[in-house]
Image (cartoon, rainbow, N blue to C red; front, side, top):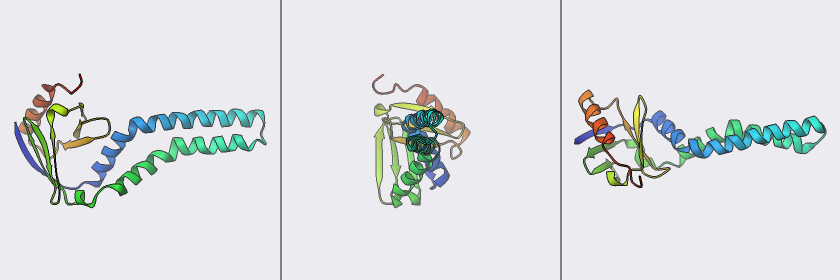
Length: 159
């Protein structure tokens, strides 16, 4: 397999990728937020003048509603300016290579953790929080079929 394509910077796709990567960590925060909301409601029902009840409610709502968007926005701001120029992606039988104007990353397929396919992209996971997004819309039908067959034949590391 030899697929090479130019991938322009796409802020919306980067945001979706960050949300995808952070989802497992943020799930536990949202569950904790739900528990705090229930605790706050229970405390308020028992003693309406309890400040602890309202603190638990506010914190719970914050954890359920606000932490995820704040975390994604912060992660977006923390990204290097290097990525804003787009990059050349090369996929071959041994490597995934990302070449930016000022940096290059190469990852061996043998280190692959898992592959998650969505209608728009493949998320190639190397570990729990390192993902490479491979956009389908930049590939031809033949390239998509070739790549899909290739990743279906891979054996993730540690499995």
